[in-house]
Length: 301
Image (cartoon, rainbow, N blue to C red; front, top):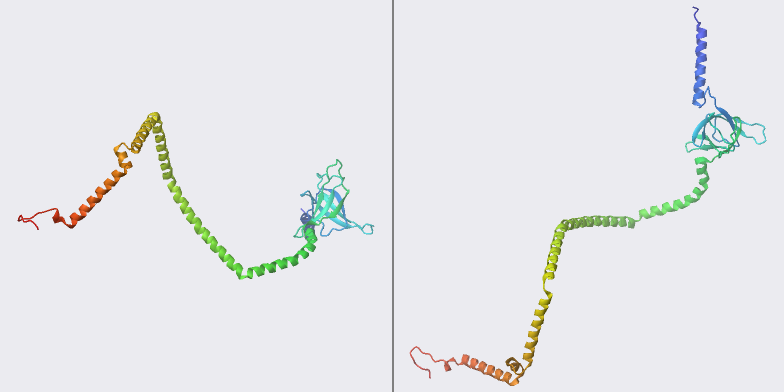
């Protein structure tokens, strides 16, 4: 068998290396060597940031890649044409549009906004109308004039906040708030302790309440057993006796009536009591006048 010369071996290795390098570059670009994608074109007036190998999306789903970008030199409108490789399974409705979008990190992608399904599909090789979407960075750029107007107000607000925070009164107020918070904490603990005591006494209170209700029920039962008619008859009899007593007191013929109604009996009784009182006073002052007592039987003169 004839050996291969070193020159041929070197050439084969070089060719294989070139093929592998080309395939790797295509892979990194998102392109496939054996791709069977359909080709579509998109026309732009401005492709800021768009480049070959940028991803192509449809409603957020990746469907292909940008293969090439060409400038139409000498044309009246001077459009820029982007060549897209789109998956054959993707059917693009007629009237769809392509937009260039970018995020805050500078990543650029091409998004195809699918038109409502009208039943008509674009054929491979057709040109899609494209425009540049502002994207997040574009929206931020559009907001810059408004932000510039707001900045002086923000500076004034920050200056007022700094002045407020530097005011000693604010520190005193915060200190007072801390004290109030501490007092509320202590009060809450005391209230919790009080409620715990109340909760502990609730069972005994409920037991007493139950006992009181039982006694009330017993009293009600006893009242139901009382003969109200007989009791009222006794009350009426007692009232009749009281009425008879008051009548006898009002009558002058009775002893008690005479005592209460006859003035002479009152004055005689009063005089008797006065004489008895005088007698007792004289007895205390001169007891020997009324009592004579001697061991030897002598009499006082």
